[in-house]
Image (cartoon, rainbow, N blue to C red; front, top):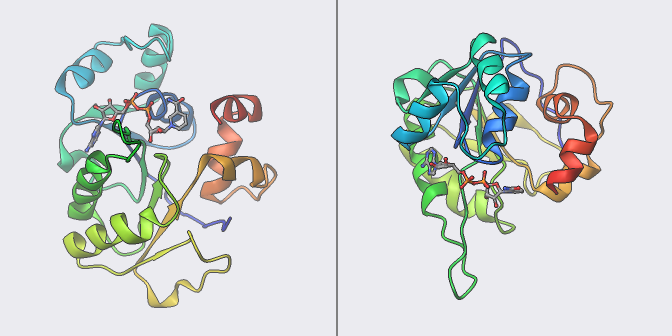
Length: 202
Ligand SMILES: NC(=O)c1ccc[n+]([C@@H]2O[C@H](COP(=O)([O-])OP(=O)(O)OC[C@H]3O[C@@H](n4cnc5c(N)ncnc54)[C@H](O)[C@@H]3O)[C@@H](O)[C@H]2O)c1
């Protein structure tokens, strides 16, 4: 897994469910974080300091707000971000075919605010190749930028690309180096959520 250096990191977490909300809370101790969700009711309850899924206690939701975290469904609020972490659902139908609609819609939203140099991390569960075949074409079309994916690239030559897409499959979390240097996105994901918490989600 490549480790991407970032400076002046400002995170957007797209999809504040079981995965996204605790991730956003954990990151809020270290970075400015904007939590984005399309569900108005979800944003309302989080702004009022409550998570009905109880992934976070009321105290933890307030902690995130005190850390400066913004809960929003306005695209304008994430346009200053430079790292986008996608945690929208990928449900499967009765034929076990994944429904990638939320992922496509999230990619469209991000494409509208992306700037050269930004990083997009897909944490939603996807089949191999989905980021390159489904998500990147949407990002490129909507933003007009050119992206490289780490999905099939063990070494990255980013010179010819405007931005980077990381496909972070959950089984890859285990393989990633917990002691990676401090200025990497990968380190940040694993360094803030402790190893047991990360392993517990796999
Ligand atoms: N729940 C887990 O323990 C777990 C573990 C590993 C991986 N995953 C994967 O992580 C992803 C998210 O799972 P989850 O359980 O957190 O889902 P979830 O259903 O709890 O939450 C998803 C959130 O995304 C929001 N959303 C949907 N479409 C959106 C869009 N276009 N833009 C912004 N927000 C949008 C929904 O309103 C919802 O609040 C899935 O792909 C899942 O397979 C989940």
